[in-house]
Length: 268
Image (cartoon, rainbow, N blue to C red):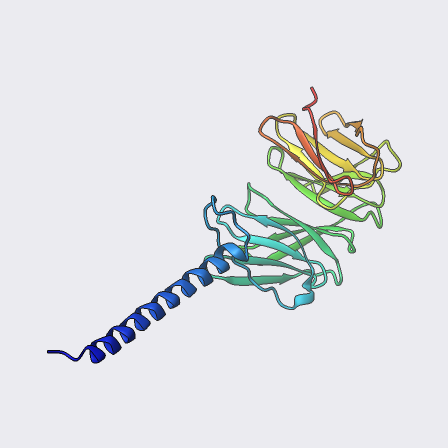
């Protein structure tokens, strides 16, 4: 007959082992959930999401704007680094191209869906630049108006031209890539001032919409007849910071200090 004291000691050790194992499993589950859900604050009724980040060296590069090509590669401007960079997420590799003009201050990039080239703005250099990734070549065009302060760029796939905003001179500019020639349109409102990347091409109307932050207006340029139309925003402020369009063709914008999202019905 087995000793009851020995059996009691055995069961006590067994229970302790099982309890310890369960505690370890619980800790692992809690730790996993805290990493996936706690840190990212994902609601319990939503699918778990994992974020990936890649460091761009040096840390003082001051990355401005990104654009993604058809292969999923991410292009970005390094304002302080004076470079255009490319991240290939699949291989986690970063390639950088130095801009010929020193301290050019690149602040915006846009992908040319027709040729696969990358165009960018040089805010300090007062130039439009082009990167041909396949050939590792860079080309620059000087904007006719001195110190125009270009800050936004948009490629028009319907014409193959580039449009950009001139913050200091209150103009919308166009670079015709087929003739290497510039056209500039002056905004009627003298207080019109653009925010970064606040120029939007709407293919339905073949026109460009833009933000007038200080003028508190939404503007539209129709290049085909060189007409500019402006609409005053009802809430008086000078904090409009972004513009986009939806599937309904309406125009959406952000009011930073007012903590609002605005919508303007698509004009005829």
